[in-house]
Image 1 (cartoon, rainbow, N blue to C red):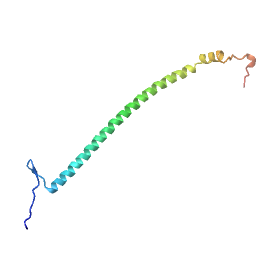
Image 2 (image 1 turned 180 degrees about the vertical axis):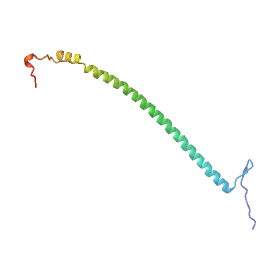
Image 3 (image 1 turned 45 degrees about the horizontal axis):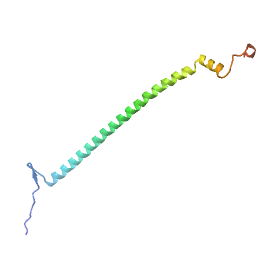
Image 4 (image 1 turned 90 degrees about the vertical axis):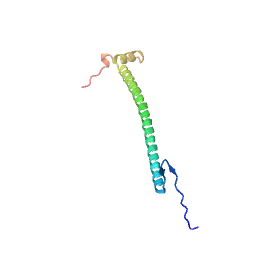
Length: 105
């Protein structure tokens, strides 16, 4: 009973797996898997950021258009002819008479 029974590691395609090589292979596969997952995750993050940037660019274009419209409206509201028309028709204002004008020196 003093005989030592050794079991052989399985052989696949001429490769025999021994204990130290099997461990290093598993470590290598684990690292490769982790790196692959990190690469996929980073690509997904890049794609999500590109979608966000695209969305922000659309919002920026819309805001530029709204800004142009508001600048045009502001210019039309500051028109002196329009201000005079509103003052006369809606507010009932009129030009002062020469006696109402006081010159300050």
